[in-house]
Image (cartoon, rainbow, N blue to C red; front, top):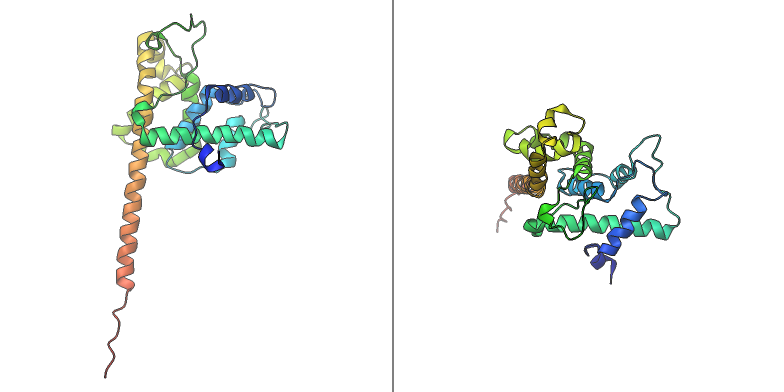
Length: 234
């Protein structure tokens, strides 16, 4: 399989386990993202209106600049390449699903603590989703002012509400009534896939309009600068 082809292949369960094992190993700091948080973070990066430098979002994955974070201590160049490949493939999968198959999009969420059994229906599981939402908001914060058009628009700001509430609600009394009530918390979790798709579409449509406007402006400038060919006198 070529590199160009493999980058678009979704991670298998075994590969997700491999990536999770590294993210929770001694090779990274205690502030490193776990797999659920990484999924939320990469989803935000895919949706983001600005392209972040690879070094910047990798630093965020390993835990960001802090005393407890020293990046990732890979055992070899091969391991570094392998882990980065898994991360990039997951990013590519998220981008493809949100772009081409949005109805199939689902956030990757851990089972809650004391999860009774694997026989429980997915509809009956009370996912916490805190880590996923915290990862997503880390991506939003990393994008800075570029996210302002969505956050300052009353019609679109509500799309971030379930993500913010689940990310910060345990420490922010503003979201207390949503986090402390089990049914309300479950409703926030249920809104996460819809919110991610709406946010992705918002920025994708703005980027498309900007591209069309730019091409139109360039076309007009080209017409103005085109000189009419002179006719030769015989």
